[in-house]
Length: 287
Figure 1 (cartoon, rainbow, N blue to C red):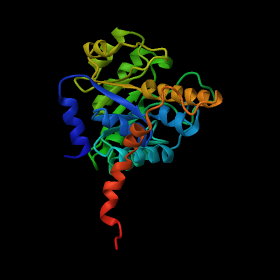
Figure 2 (figure 1 turned 180 degrees about the horizontal axis):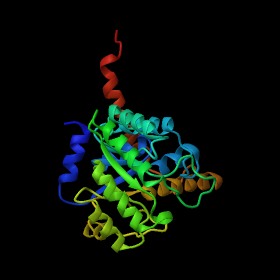
Figure 3 (figure 1 turned 90 degrees about the vertical axis):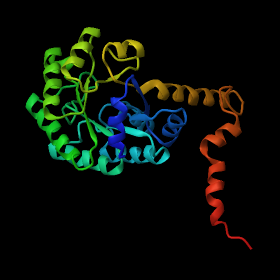
Figure 4 (figure 1 turned 120 degrees about the horizontal axis):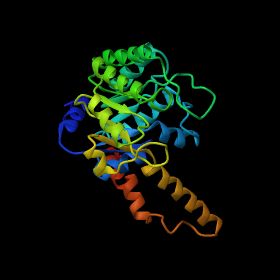
């Protein structure tokens, strides 16, 4: 089965799907080792790791695609939902983005309706007019036919254009053939329920990390509200940043490492030193 076919099968199974948010080879490898079948290549995590900066549309297609290749190579069996952002331009750019990720082995890709280039402020997410957003999703669905990659259509218009417009867009994206739907920034549980209903039986995705002004159900509540997929962009990124800060503090204090550091043998095992030796053995020249 292809990655998109496996993703469809996974989403057809009962239960809530937790997608760890990954950004590089190590985060991907650790997620797979922990038993997760799928992961979300998060734009916010990639921006944090590559730029040390915020998720404000500063990351390019090339940087995100390079990060996908790292994630996919480190855990090739993981079903990756890639953050395609706004598709990096118009409908034709969307098609190029979708085809590239499909050919590279992504199981699904997110396309959103924000305006690009972004206004020079970190506040708000102005969105395209409804019919322009429709054409982006239509272009994505058409391009996805080549590889079968699933299209996750996201609307960011709730804060700027209101909930009724957001629901209308979800219904429109369903009409256009989107496979997964995502209402960003729902205000409360009732809005989540109504957005799930608008998805008309197709899986609904949610960001469930704390910090942003949105409804934040826990995993059980999310499942009861009808959500199918939850991702947690700060779930690993924030502890990783805390670990780096702790390591730096330990060095400043004259220590060799933080008390939270992994034992050297465990770290070497995670990084695959023994695997390397086993794989290299047939190619060693002897005699």
